[in-house]
Length: 259
Image 1 (tube, rainbow, N blue to C red):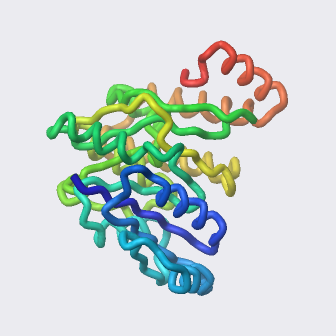
Image 2 (image 1 turned 180 degrees about the vertical axis):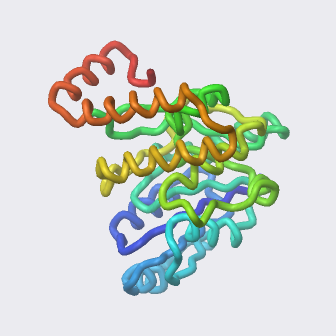
Image 3 (image 1 turned 45 degrees about the vertical axis):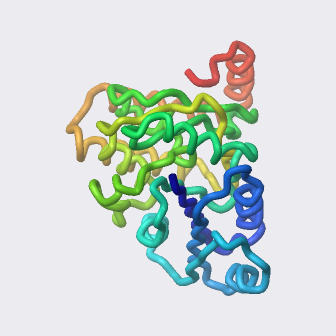
């Protein structure tokens, strides 16, 4: 079974190096690692061309029309049975991740996509977030299904289409809405360490509201979704406060960081 990792980047060579290092240390290496560089300078291109890269690393350096377009460029070029989108700055949690994922798919040929836990900064603490996908709770957004940990059979992009170019941030959730009925599985282990740099409250809320619009596109208006949106907005601002961070630390101590 073959696996393609796709990394998009923009003017962040330092973060890209960290991501590449985490790919190269895997006990089971990918079939290919596509780097899609949309930078407005040639720093990343020069590094890729001047350094000895592994045979599986390939790249394209040209301007794109946003995150969705960059994702699509990688997907259109990859050949692996399984695809994964590992953004520059994000890293695999340890050297066993790809071996675990390939073994997971090999145990069930009918499995179409899987995901796992994400090691991320929340409320000032590093925690492992993620739980099995529940379609009935899809209106809550990508709360328990974290896109960096998703490994998707490439055939699903052929069946449901690529990422929506009209979306600025929630293109991953929009795609999840489309593949929600496909057989999936959960790996109860942290697969990716998420880079928190560049995430502002404004971007977070914009992504959240864009996600809710995507849900309504496929599933119609939902009162539970509206209530959930109010809850999440209040909760986000609470976690930004000192009191909220204290409450979250207490929650982690109680083993409730995934609730």
